[in-house]
Length: 183
Ligand SMILES: CC(C)(COP(=O)(O)OP(=O)(O)OC[C@H]1O[C@@H](n2cnc3c(N)ncnc32)[C@H](O)[C@@H]1OP(=O)(O)O)[C@@H](O)C(=O)NCCC(=O)NCCS
View 1 (cartoon, helix red, strand yellow):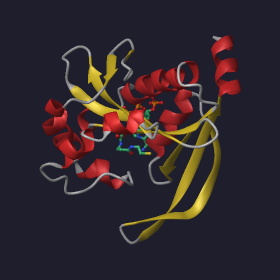
View 2: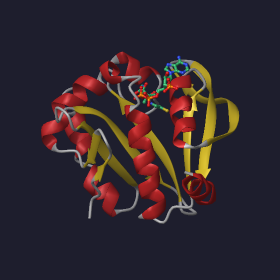
View 3: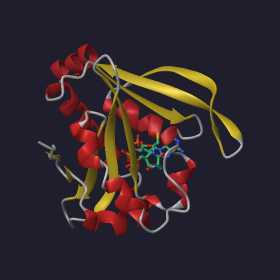
C-alpha cells in the first residue's frame, strides 16, 4: 500500500491530480530549478500531471516513492519528498519545498520521517543524499536528519553550462539505530 506518514506539523501522502496546479506554481519557481537536477524550467502546463501520473507505477515497480508534503494546519501543499531505490537496499533521498515555506524546518521534519520509514518499513540499509556544492541549505537538512558527509565529487554534473561539485551524504541503518537509541 502507498505509504502515508504523519509528523507533528506535516502529512506526507500520495500526490493527487488535484495537486498539479500547486506543483506547477511551487516547483516552477526559478529558485527550485537552480539547485536541482531533474526539475524543468519553465514548468509548463501538463508537466505536473505527467509527473504525478508516474508515482503509483514507480512505487509498484520499486523504482521510487514520492510523497506530497502537506501542512496539516491549512492542508496546503508545501513541497515534495521522495526516495529513489538503488541496489543493495540503498535509496537516495530528494526533496523540494516551495520558497515561501523555506527555513521553517519543514524539509528536516519530512526528511526525518521518511528516513525512519525507510529503515523501519522498507528494509533499507543506507540512505544517501546529494546536493550541489552551491546549495548548503540542502546539506544542512541532511546533517539535521542525521546523515554524515561522505565526500565531495569535483565537477560531477553539468548544469547550465557549468560543471558543479556534488556533496554526498549518507546514513546507514547502524548509525540510525545508534542515534535513535541515544535519544
Ligand atoms: C533545500 C530545501 C529543500 C530546504 O528546505 P527547508 O524546509 O527550508 O529546510 P529546513 O528549514 O528544514 O532547513 C534549512 C536549513 O538550511 C539553513 N540555511 C538556509 N540558507 C542557508 C545557506 N545559504 N547556507 C547554509 N545554511 C542555510 C537554514 O538556516 C536551516 O538550518 P537551521 O535549522 O540550522 O537554521 C529548500 O531550500 C529547497 O526546496 N530548495 C530548492 C530545491 C532544492 O535545492 N532541493 C534539494 C536538492 S538536493
